Length: 343
Image 1 (cartoon, rainbow, N blue to C red):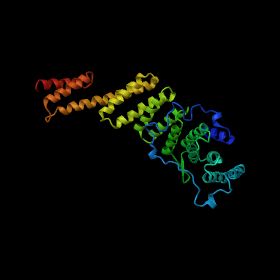
Image 2: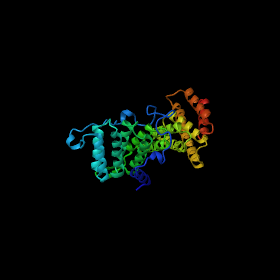
Image 3: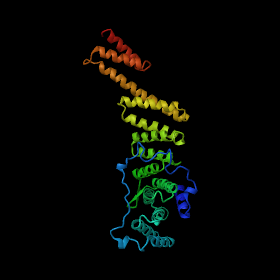
Image 4: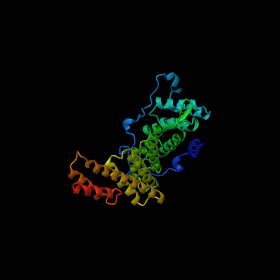
């Protein structure tokens, strides 16, 4: 069992509040904290996500409906099943309460019980995350916001560790896990774990082979949490992600220039360790070489029978002005002299 999983199970099993254990202040929305309506470049848009709908009584109420006549009686009944360690029965009874009496005082307590059972008893982190998210989305004022969002984060960590089981086989679940982390950041951008969550989101984007989007998330992380340790990590990782994109799109002159500018900024920031700074310096040299290659090829393009001598002379002169110390400079000077002499 992973250490993260052990912590979550111990806390839930003991029935204590995570808010009293290790929750940093400012998790729930407050003055000066970003909201979900703010821009989060690199996150999936709300239109791309399946929004949880309000739970309603099922069609087959005699099977899945409540066994008691009131919410209070149903809650007591569900709690008795839980005490007997009848986890499936207790979960079903709590869920029936939420569906039948969604506005009752017992509903948010029952909803949390559903999530807790999914997590600590059924060991289904994906289902648990969905239930905690439902609790936060529909009962945010009736639950301990800090505690639930912390549980969401730890459950997302478990989802990442465990993967997804389909037909008894375990697979990576990158997209769903990433969206879980995004949901946490959107609901608690002021949490102490938010920078680490964003770092994970960017890393998962790289796992999806979406380095350009990953770089966007790294950049947003640095902007939102500039003094965090994660911002320094993001600076280096963004440089690497940008280079992957550059190597795929080296023909784009503006992208090359933009990448060189960023790499220079990263080096001059003084935040990289010596090894990272050396590597990023090599990235910059590679990018500059691409730019030089493009400029040389552009000059050669004009040096043809279909182009005017004046255009070719101008192109070669521009190359020498920009790259006077280039390895190709002697060759360009020789050809420029020949053309100026009319050869």
